[in-house]
Amino acid sequence: MTRLLPLIVLLLLSACGRGGPVPPRESWALVSIGGVPYPAPATLGLGTDRYAGRGPCNAYSGQLAREVARLAFGVPETGEAACPALAAERTYLAYLTDVRAQDVTEGGSTLILTTGSGVELRFRPLTSGV
Image (cartoon, rainbow, N blue to C red; front, top):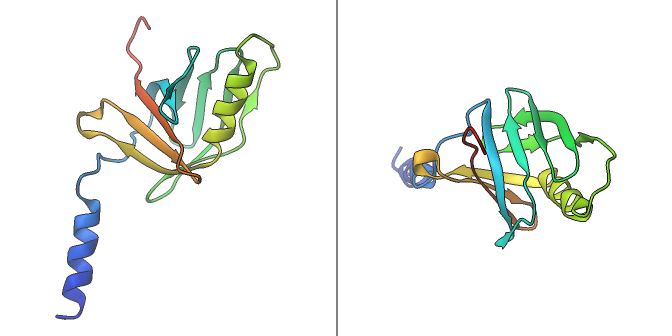
C-alpha cells in the first residue's frame, strides 16, 4: 500500500487546477487559434454525441465522442458556400478534428481545446444576442 501512495497522490494532484468536463449543450464563440484572434465569427455547440456550429461561411456539424479526458470531434459535415474567410474556416475545422485535450477554466469563462501539435483553440461562452 505504501508503494501505491505516491501514485495515488500524483493522480489526485493531476486532477487539480482544471475546470470540469465540458457539459452538453453548451454554446461557445471562437476567440483565438494559437493565440491569434480569429478573424470572423464562429460558434461551437456541444451536444451529448454531436457538435454543431457556424463558421464564417458555412454551418457545420459532426459526431462527438466524450472520452474520459477529452472531446473527440469527428470529421464535420459542412456547406459549400464561399466567402472571404473560407481559408480561416477550413483551418478552424481542421484543428477541431485534431483536438487531443480539453479544459474549462474555473467559472466556465473559457473553453480551451488543445490539438495534437499543441495549438490552443480558445472559446468564450456564447451569450444570447451575440
